[in-house]
Length: 268
Image (cartoon, rainbow, N blue to C red; front, side, top):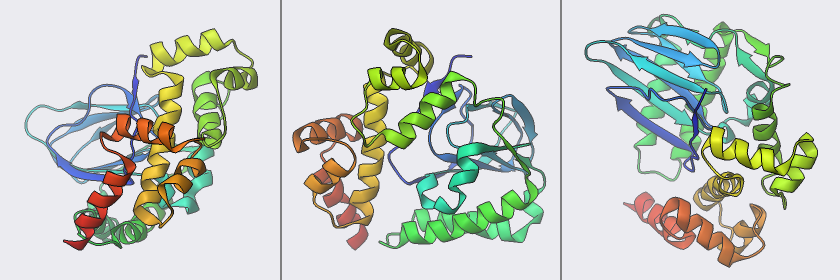
């Protein structure tokens, strides 16, 4: 299967959609779909489910997923949130997957509906506490959701190359890693890995590592008072010049401008 990788920098992305992405993709975020009207088929890994009004679907971090929209009009709430907002579930996201990614009739669970409404409201709230509030609602949502969605170990996926690559990069992106170090760890040739990234992930290895570093830098710029130089070194760069160049390439603005715009937004 061909798919594309979506580097995401923001902690959360929340919107109402009249259509869902029909090309296979993955990212390090959690993706939750709450169907309000219409129908769609949702695929996560090898599991395919039918979404109807009132249903909820979840794709775990680094899980390939996509959708086939049904005929007629549809509307769905889409929550794409960083697992960094809920470290309490880190082990589940790292080593497990839902037996089924579908919760039927989630509309009948008032706790889940209130949590979804809370995430949506906080996402559009002009407050420096928005991420903290989103985290609270997200923890409630995931706690309630995983009560009814049994999880299983990723046994079948642990022996494949893709999960090993994503896991290694997630654990070591702040280190001085290279295609050679990754190849040595996975015991494959650097040439093969380079080809794998280009042909399967549609991104170069270095660009993927930079996307992880910039995503973490955005989080630190949003939530902390560290200097830009301190953040550059914390996320794995050995110079602010390189950090600024990579940040600008991904976010289309400098780290200084990103922080300035964020603070202006929070004081409006």
